[in-house]
Length: 238
Image 1 (tube, one colour):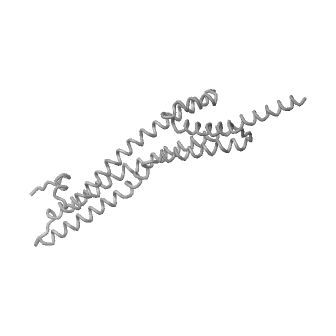
Image 2 (cartoon, rainbow, N blue to C red):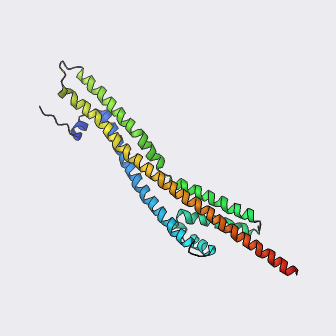
Image 3 (cartoon, rainbow, N blue to C red):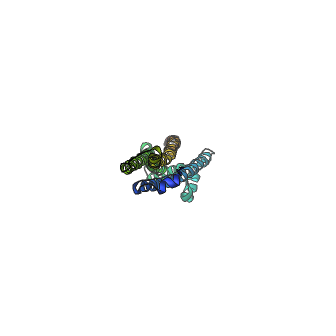
């Protein structure tokens, strides 16, 4: 006799434990895909905002104008713009306190930018741990469902006087479905995690490079201001 071995039929006739495992894996898979889609668009927007600000930063616009624009656009700014704003904010606060030491000013701006950089990285890496957990745990959850289903199937076969392949196949097949769904949940999560980790590394490198370049600009400005002050003092002394 032909038996219906479709996945739906197998799951409907599976034991309660296997059904619960499959339900859990389906929920995890849906949550994983939702996290992947959100992270994909979030990183895409992050890259676009960083590129727009970097283009404007190197267009010749003054630092004060960029800072004023960043302050007005704080809610919609990208990570690079927020890092720039935090550095400029700290730099201006120190200048308002009449601190003229170049090393102190530069160190304060760099510390503010590094703190902002860490916050941006924490935000960029959100949900990555969830994807890593799904990728590593889902196959084992599916395997648990398979082992339980096979135990249940053999327990039922023990009461039969004659065992044939047709009596064994449905129980084994319904148990293996759990492993298949576990892999179905794990593979996209692993692929998504690896891709997003590489993208975040690229963004981190770009932000760290910007911090160094902006610090160099501040240092040059401070050196130029110090030289100008020295020349003015010398001229007034004569």
